Length: 455
Ligand code: MN
Ligand code: MN
Image (cartoon, rainbow, N blue to C red; front, side):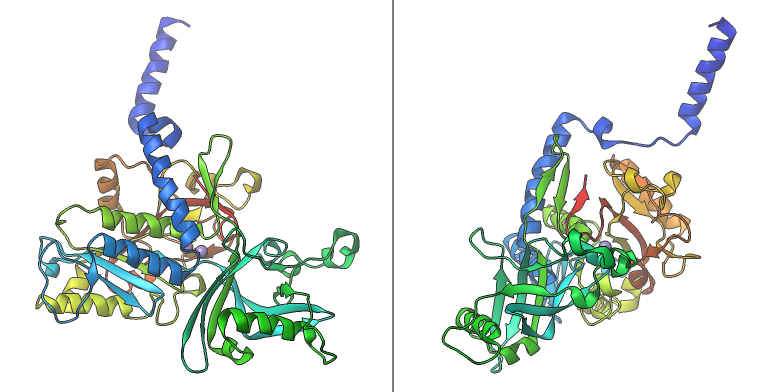
């Protein structure tokens, strides 16, 4: 190459180096020691995924770990000092953990909020029936699922039943190696000509998500519904329940398999419910790992009902987090709204990882990628940014500097192309409390599928 041209090229690369944004890849950026540390962390993550497949189980596991780390139940009206560790459970389905900081809470608190509910198949209130010698549960799906993904995979049943006298029975069936599993059936391809003509969202219809639970009839009974009776006898023996007790139950069907490493290099985790337990586990681990007393009060919220729009008394559209923060403020003689207005929040939720096989719905320049660090999402929503809080440039700047200062590998991401769909997180409900909020989470492949993948 002539000398002059060579100089020009090196000038261009120097300028590129200086002016262009650099995209990072954990595969290049992380040392082998760091990768080994991450892999080790994921062992704990995988066992959390296996232990906590529902919001109730995740809440109970968080409380167990928090108590082991010295957290005690928050006592409204008690006085607290820096370094104190408290937690508050909301109806067994959501939990808030806090470590009191050195600085007064009047200056606000730092919040990390993740959700512990995931898309699943709930039982209806009157679920049990038999048809042509087979026993079934009727279901109503929870959250945004592609219904065709749920038949023909092993399902486990988790939840609680309250008997007529109010006694609680916990149910967890299908997780032990020796447990039976349940399943939703699908029509064989040989006879699927008519099914194939349906539009994809109706390939399996909501009322076809019937769970097969048995086939052996109650013996010596010429009466009708012998299979249903057979099933009810087993349920009565195992749980002490009668059919009416399903009315006061919350029973959730989730995939029965365990979390696994994915890939020859074991670089990914495949499991049910990583949206959003990948953020719940990390947020929980972070607050439990705080040594001594942080500067600002650290608050971790593990919430419920995000997948159906954060509605209800255990979702973040309700006031439970606000009430907790008001109570916390009050215990220091501080006005609740002063604490809220000065607080900041990382809404810890997943984003869609770019999928090369299904590249079309993504806009590559602004998509997030698996293996390129946590994704900071300034806004979610759909259409013209409807249904999002859209974090300010000022707050993005603050978060950006924080991440860079501590050498965190991160990327930005938007949920797909403009007008291709969309979604939301808890961010806007926290932001609605006058709290600066931004989404920070992990990119997920096959989000909301029974087997999701993260790097
Ligand atoms: Mn989520
Ligand atoms: Mn979700």
